[in-house]
Each structure stands twice: as structure tokens, then as C-alpha cells.
Figure 1 (cartoon, helix red, strand yellow):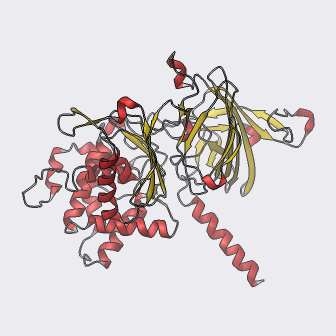
Figure 2: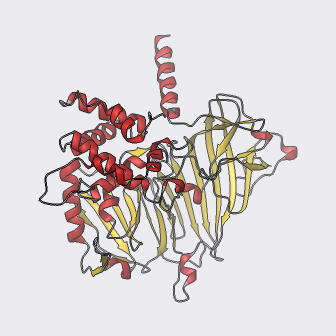
Figure 3: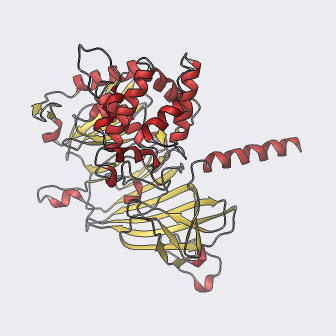
Length: 487
């Protein structure tokens, strides 16, 4: 009986941990829409000769409230949603899952406002009771997905998950595969099949290589760990020889793989004036950046690091990978500690790692401070910031975007950097010490995800334990953002 009680306690604690960051349910007319907890995702990507990708997916999930479970997917061609049923008289048995009997169901768009992208739910067949388990099947096509087909002399299939968190957007895995919002962490399997036309395809991805299974040159099975979320995965396939690839090197204990377009690999932008300079070798800059970051935070949190130089200026971070430019490489490597080493539970909390990364980009001072001058409190620069910036941490709990276009193009970065410069001033230039301890504690406990409430509490705890008990973190947040942070 005691063993059973302990097991039930562990099971209950596990469920609570999984749903901690789950947004609340909401009504859409008479229907109660709820968020699912995905246990496992299976995807089959078929790369076709017509340069499309046919996608077959299955999500296994739990729900803890009665209602209509939501899923996240940008609708593409031929999107169909199916529910497994037992009555064989009215079923559709799909060609990919011969053992499964499926019923096609309608799906509907939620009525989120213009600043929060819609999600989707299925019709009456998906009114689930609380504490139930089920699966959803999806069939859709990614049209004209082969970037190589746009150039007559190129061959093979060039396709990459192009995530984005700029230009007032936050587009992650849901651009390509059915998924959940960022709060949900779950293992994923991807089966990759290439048409015979596409010979010698290469796959670059941040999967668990020990579980990668090559069936043939045209058929692979990839596995991703249970702590990944919709922002974690990096996947890129292209014909061998399509990109310039450097031999791998170990930098500060991490195996680096750098590749990209030749015209981008050999240029960098000056931070002043945005001029260009030629790069003959990417490694000195990489070594310098890694030396800076490991000196600040300690050991790099990833065994391997993929650097795809596919941008002229900006970049985007994944777990142990980035699609970037050399100009933004330091920013993206910083995110490997804060942003993808430990990561925000949603768009509402994403201003934290972006503000910190911009603070780092500015030399850990950022606002109105020049070399040789005394270290000053940058908080005085707030008068230069429009007051609309203070809405930054008060976005909708369903928010995916790093920044809201009504608040200004750069507010998550600029306002966040000013705020953290102020915190650093109050901590006598010890914010990096605090951040190092925060990252180390979350990773060592495998508690990778956080929201702004978690982060604020850790700041207050660290300040009290390190001789700054008189520093009221809550008041600092309220002073800057006008009101209490609520999660």
C-alpha cells in the first residue's frame, strides 16, 4: 500500500510538472477549448519528385480537462485530420497506417485576436472527457518546398526548418508539422523518405545520433529527446556538395560543424555602419566568441553545435544549432545558454532571453556608456523609450511572438536590454554571476523551461543569498513595467 501511495504521488507530481506552463482553457462560443499534453509525436516526411513534401503525422496525447483539444499547425495543402475509432463500418483506413481505423473530422480555427496567431481544434468527435488519452492523425502537403528547384543548375532537395522570431513573428515547428505551443515538451520521431530522384541527400539535424537509424540512402529514422519543444528542432537536408562545409572542430569542448553558402561564409558585417569585410577563416571568430561565453557561463551546454550560415544579418537559435550570419553568431551562441540551453515557456517570456542577448551584444552595459567612462546606471535612459514599451511582459498568455507590432519593432530587445542593464547596475556588475548560477541550476536539475515568474523569483532569491537583501526585485520590475508581472 505504501509503494502504491508513493507511485501515485510521483505520477501526480509528474502531471503537475507537465502542465505547470499550460495556458488556461477558454471558450469559443459554446465550446470549451483545452490544451493537450503531447506524449509522443510521429512524423513521416516524404520528399516527392514534384518538389513537394507529403507529411503524415500522429500525436499521442493526454488531456486533464473535458473539452476540445487544440493543436498548432499553419494549414497547408490538403490538410486532413483523423481520429482513430473502433467501428469499422464508417472508417477510413489510411494507406500509411493499415492497422489503424480512422475517421476524418472537420477542424476549426480559434478566434484569437490579430496579435495572437490562431490555433485549431476538431469537431464533435473530439469532445474528450477529462484525464483521457487519445491520438490525432494529420495528412498535409508542403507545396514547392524544394529551394533547390528555384535554380536551374541546382539538383537535389534543399529544405530547412526556417523558424523565425523577428519582424513581429514567432514561427516555429507549427510552420511544418502539427505541434503544440512552447510550453509542451515531448519526444518526437521523424521518418524521412526521399524519392529515387534525390540521390546523395545529406541530413543535418540536432537529433540523438545514437538513435538515428539509416535504412537506406533514401530512408532514415530520426529521434529527438523528450525535453525538446516546438522551438528546439533543427532539420536541414540538401544534396552533397550543395553547400560549402568545413571539417568539424572541437571548440571549448563542443564539436562544431560550420557550413553554408559560400557568399555568406566569407563575409561579415561591421557593427558600425553595417559595412562588409571578407572572412578567410571562420574559426578565429568562433574561438573568440566561445572563449567569451565559457568564461562567463562555464562549460558549453551542448556536446555538438551546428552553425548554418544562411543569413546576411540576422539569425535564429535552436537547441545546439543555429541558422545565422557571422554578424549575429555571438548573439545566437549566447542563446545556447539562455534561450535554448534553458528556454522560455512561451512567447510571453521570450523577451527575457532576447533582452539579455542584446545586453550582451552591447558589451554588458548597452545604453549611454562609452569605454573609459565610469559605469553608470542606464535606467536614466528610460526617458528615451516610449512608454508603450512597458507592455512587454504583459502580453497575452497565449502569445507566441517575441514582440507585439503595436509596441514597436525592437521593443523586446531594446527595452529588455535597458532593464537588465539597470539590474546589473544594482547588482554591482554581477548579473552575469547570477545568470551563470541560474543556467547551471536549471540544467543540472533538467528543469530546462522557465517563465518570467520563475526568472523573477530566482533573481530575488539570488540577490538575498549574495548580499543584496535590500534589493527588492519585485519593485524593480514594477518600476520599469508599471505593474505586477502576472503568469
